[in-house]
Each structure stands twice: as C-alpha cells, then as structure tokens.
Length: 325
Ligand SMILES: [Zn+2]
Image (cartoon, rainbow, N blue to C red; front, top):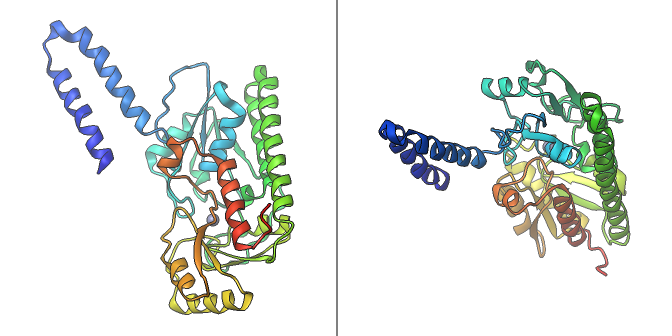
C-alpha cells in the first residue's frame, strides 16, 4: 500500500505536466524528467538508475551474485538484479520484459549449479556462471530442485571462487580496467577471508555441532566448519507446506539433540519454526538466512552479504551454545 501511495503524487504530477500549455513545455519537461528519475530509483532491481553509457551494463541473476558484481565493478559497472532482491529465487520465473532487459546487458552473471533454470531463455551477449569450476555436491533431494546443491555462496571460500569468476568475466569484456577489477576483487576476497577466520574462531568452542535450519541451504557451510545441518523443510528449496508429521519429527529430533534454538529464514513464513520451538524446552526461533535475497529495509540500511553472514554467525553462536568471549 505504501509504495502505491508513494506513486500517486508522481502520477498526478505526470498528468498535470503533460496537460500544461506549450509555453510551459520546457519547464514541464525538466520536471517530468525529475519525476521519471524518482520512479526509477524506487525500483532499483528492475530499472537501471544510471544512464552513464561508459559503464558496463551487468544483469545479475539474484542477490548474492548482484552484490559480488557490485563489489568488483563498483563505479565501472551499472548492475541490476533480475530476481528482485527481496524475492525468494528458487521458484522464480522471469517475465519476458526481464529477459529482454537482460539481453540488452553487456554481461549476464548467474550463480548456476541449477538455481536459474530459466537462464537458457536469455540470449545474452556474454554470460558467466559464477559457480563454474567449483566442486559441487550432489543434491540428495528427490524433488524438483536439480542435480546439484546450489547454495555455494554460503561458504565464504566458495564465494571467493565465485568472485574470481566474476572478476575474470569483467576483465575479459573490459580489459582497460583490469587493474581496477583485480584490486576490488582482492579487497573483497580479503573480507571473505576475514569472515572465514572469524567463523572458524568463533564456532571453535561450542557445546553443540547440530543445528536445525529451515531448508537445506547450509550443507557447504556445515561441511566447511564441521557442523551437522538438519532442516525442517527437507528439500533444497523452502517452498511448499511442512506437514504436521514432519513438524513432529523435528520436535523429537530437537529434544534428542538437546537443542533450544530452531532457525527460520528472512523470506519465509516463520510459523513452522515457531510451532517446533513451542514444543522444546526453552525453545526459541532465530534467523539463519540463506541470503537468497534481502528485504527492502535492509537494502535501505545498506545491509549486505557480509552483514548477513555475521548475523548468521551470531545466531549460530546462540544455538550452538558457543562460549561467548
Ligand atoms: Zn535455497
């Protein structure tokens, strides 16, 4: 409702300006441009807000890839996310307009490993799969989620490899700025290394190794840091109803493991996690974000991948009963 109301004055401004007499035309067109610009900035994931032709136009498939491109390309690229960055990407289907927009880009970057089942519909000038060359785990999901586990970005070391693939693609299409892209990639990889060090240190002395995520997004993460992932939703996607029988199984599991925390996600309904938490001693629900998107408040506050990973670590430290220093 808020976003609709916000557009009403712009709409009226548009009507008034377009019906003004010709003598006011010059002034009106200036104002109209302002109005158009403000529409663009309310939809950063769909419409590029930068009109500087010298920038490389990149369409990233979804949030983490979008952020990695932004970190490496900075002010040499104009990047948008095809999946709106507050939308869960697993069952997303792009519109014809979104596909056509991606086809006008200099570069399309996608995660791959089966996340973007629609990627072949885009006839891009240049396309790069960020997860190319990574050792992917086979999916143990018998549903529709594909052959491989696609959640590579949740392992900071695999995220570094995605950053390197994106860097190499930018260097290839814009070799004049090779040093710029390499320096930015090195800086971001340094931050990912710091994150990896921090996780290793802070999750080193915990009473528990088991945690219950909402969906199976954390297998790479758990393998990297020696943890055991369980999940409420047993698939590799968070879609679909959790049946009462499964809730009961997870309640028994949580009690057997002596866990007091059940995780939910930022883009899903938390009620399944809440039902389980109510049935275990001192049960509570915390967020363990698969960072498959971020909400609009987080976007406005400038929250990004590293912040979300740090939040996950803080919430894991509670669930795993780590010694807080
Ligand atoms: Zn997922």
